[in-house]
Length: 100
Image (cartoon, rainbow, N blue to C red; front, side, top):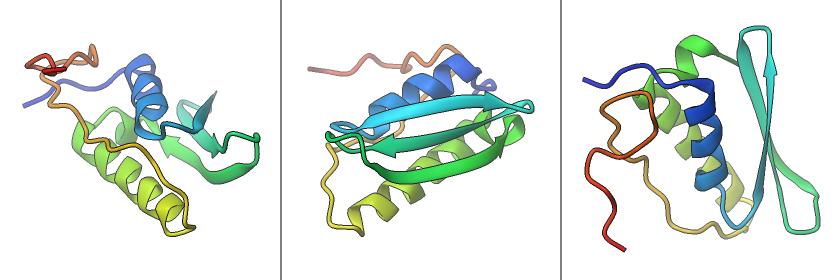
């Protein structure tokens, strides 16, 4: 069972999930919104009003990020491969460090 993700961890995951594009995060009303921009700075995806109950739940947040990735690739854009790391606490550090 994983512990709740922090806003900092959710932010880090957004940045990782949408490479090579840029993730932009805005904290609002106890939740967050994020957008993804291509290399020219054009917005290619936006999600708003994600409550803290959703982004702090690793499983729910992973699903949200995968849906966003699918929406971007459906537009014909390519993303680097990414999977949600197995998190056992709210630090954002995988349980087993990746093997590079």
